[in-house]
Amino acid sequence: MERIIGSKTENIKQTLPYAVIPLICASLFIVKRGGTDAFTLLNFEVLAVIGYVAAVTDLRTKRIPNRLVLIMLISWAVLMVPKLYLDSDAAVASFINAALGFAIGGGMFLLVYIASSKGLGGGDVKFIAAAGLYLGFGGTISTVLFGSILAGMTGTVLIMLRKIGRKDTMPLAPFLYIGILITLFMQ
Picture (cartoon, rainbow, N blue to C red):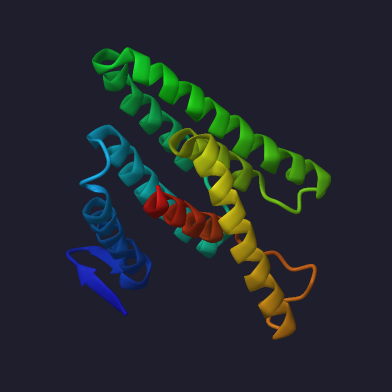
């Protein structure tokens, strides 16, 4: 399934999953456009896109690149600047909520990372901490809850079907991403 364009070879299998990004963004926009302010909607859209890339990357390589987490952090900071100028009181409240989301998500996963002797990947810790900036305290808690339940159920089914062993690893970012989407659509 390779196609030659000029002198470059493009692997359709690798680019096809990213075609889903506009669908996710459009559906999020349609559902949220009436009841969500533009700033929050833009935050949700950025998180949906970067989270999707992290989920696909984790599925393929079982890694979440530091560069992607850095992009999440920088994007959040860039999105906060206009809010500081337009409504500084709301920006301070958003910043406090974001800091709580960052600390709770990153803190919980860091504890699990340390306690599980690196059974949880460091990329997952950084990813959920950065996502916590966008989700805030409550959104981070629900994302972790939904993602963990989905990952646990999937792992249990795969072990029962003997597709994986008890010591095998599974990428967590796709489940966290589903948790993010459920949380975004519920807010």
